[in-house]
Amino acid sequence: MDELRQLIDLAGSRGWTVGSAESLTAGLFCAQIASCPGASVVLKGGIVTYWTEMKEVLLDVPAMLVEKFGVISRECARAMALNAQRIMDVDFAVSFTGNAGPDVMEEKPAGRVYCAIARRDGTVFDFRFQMDGMQRNEVRAEVVRRMISNLLSVMKEEI
Image (cartoon, rainbow, N blue to C red; front, side, top):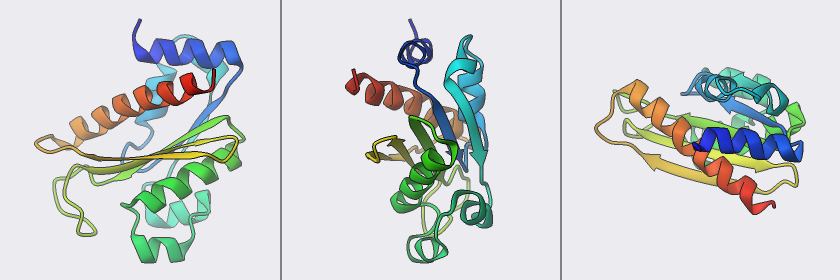
């Protein structure tokens, strides 16, 4: 059984809900979750915040945090996940922010991605990836795949 199917089955059996806050993936995580039968019981929604301003307005990411660390940062990913969890009232919120390439942004190389998972209890797990030698859409697809795997692992810790 693939990890996406396992995730949907586990979350569904526990009554857990999932939401996302997506920047570089621009909704790809939600689309991947929704591609699996049974997703409607688990996936509550997603917030796509491609522009910095939208992270501040829709996800309450503090402007001071963005000024200090940038949007391509661990701190931004954590704030996105925590605030998405609160705003959507989900059991698990997953966030994605980074540089899919091809150019350097905020002094971060192409392929640098930060993600986080926030649980309802306020615990946050964060992840940093450096995906070299990939095209933008390969980076986006790979980080979604990795975070489905990471979310499944976090969920398994709950049982």
